[in-house]
Length: 295
Image 1 (tube, helix red, strand yellow):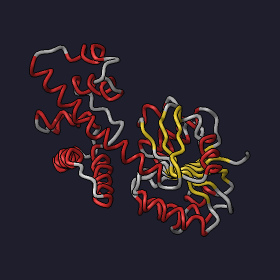
Image 2 (cartoon, helix red, strand yellow; image 1 turned 180 degrees about the vertical axis):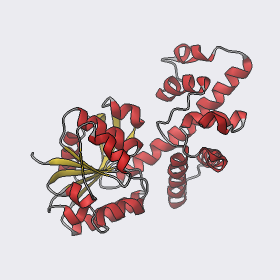
Image 3 (cartoon, rainbow, N blue to C red; image 1 turned 30 degrees about the vertical axis):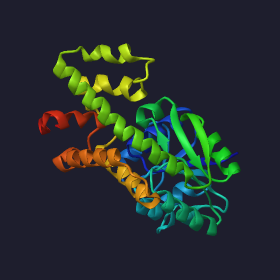
């Protein structure tokens, strides 16, 4: 299949996805309101687009990596949006993490304009995108998902078709509940180990293969212990995701007290000015925020 890949959104995740695609030689045309982020991908071989419409014009598919349903809607259906430049039949792959109901509504509107939609939220963060090992959960028509999986094969090592449009986003909510609680559990366990005088750097290997083992434990306990706050994600994004889980819980009459607690702890840290920091900054919940650490 000919044509370039359009990328709308070159933030932390979009930038990592774009860098990976450009690095394997995929023809990539990128648009973001932040010109510096676009320039970073251009330096890796991408082509800059002046609008989302331009990025979509002549594309085989357009990937969205954005932060909220209203932003996705504006990027696709707004003035100079994807729909304005797309040819009939264009495949839109939304890798944003947004509400399942909003996703279904966006897909319906896209279909009315002759466009196809696959929701393909991710897990693994920028580090996994950079090495092509993202985990993707996807919703959409079978043929459309298969096509999206071919396009995303260089950025993901695990892609699963969950069902109709919106089921990928629902699965991502489940993922974020597990991650939100998992980050808090590992941070709390790290604080306990430190207070008790255990050598924290030995714990991940000591627990490897046991029931308490996890990717979060292996990656984040050493970072928590070292107060390694380099940014690969954002605390305030977790607030958004956990609030989405709570809204879905309200709609389905599901009790989720632990998710509510995790959301409020993330919200407290965001209110303290740490919303833009990585999950590693959850350790500040145990020691009190110190802004000097983030300057």
